[in-house]
Amino acid sequence: MDKSKKKEKGTRRNEGKPWIGEISGRFLEGLGQVLTLKKEQIERGIERGNWKKGFPEEEIIDSLMRHYVEYIKGNKFDDDTGHDHRFHMAVNLMFWIELYFNNKNWE
Image (cartoon, rainbow, N blue to C red; front, top):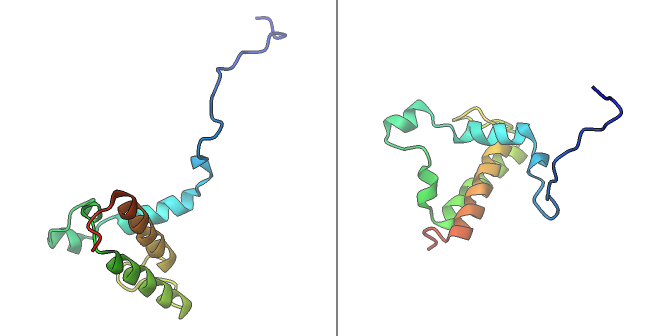
């Protein structure tokens, strides 16, 4: 094998595309943990992806703000789930953005 030859690489066209790889794995994992349904939610009939059906915008903002207030009061973790309030805020922000762009049940 001739080592003087450089192996050619395929051409990629990534200019102008979002840098998805820059999103922290810890951040994504935290979102996933908050979104993972608890046994009690499943028993109450809440199904995976329930949020995609939509909520009034005010409910999302209220939830986001409740988690923010708890965090600034010094309570880092949610009493119900045990997850960091910042991940709950991030999930609510995701809901707000997604439902806004999909115009789901805004009242």
